[in-house]
Amino acid sequence: GSPSAIFLVDAQGSIRLSSRSAEHMFGWAPHGLAGQKLASLFAQERRANFHVLFKRFVTAQLSEAIDHGSKDSLCLRRDGSTFPSQVQLRVLETAEGRMTIAHVQDITERKRIEQESRARQILLTMAGRLAQLGGWSIDLPDMRLVWSDIVAELHDEPVGFSPSCLKKTPSRS
Image (cartoon, rainbow, N blue to C red):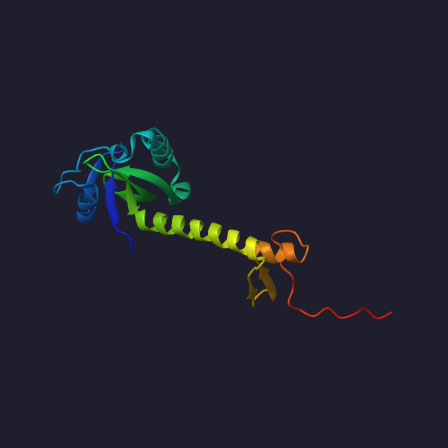
């Protein structure tokens, strides 16, 4: 999987503990992240937005704050380089009060694959239009054909059209 970093963060946004992988991912020496603001690990253009989201998360009721899902962001390494990331925040009630566990995942590889996939899809679409070829697949649970945009156009159907695989029987009068 992708590299992951885990942080224990207090209500003021200061890092109390970080995993070794966090130190490695962000380019810090062991224990070098302790005491820093978690927001400082985000690119300048994302920092203010993260700060607002973190404050909202910390002040939310526990039932609302269990999991705010994943948010894509841009993190900042100690050397100033950035990398795309996915951030999850979870509440942890401790004897010292509410803490936040922040899970940061480096999604550089995922973003690269997504970009390659989009580029390939564009090329396939262009080639399909030139050759007037399309593709289709069968969605067995729904008993539907899944047509490419080209196939829909060739059949004078709207883009996104998905015919049923079930044979239509004529109605009896």
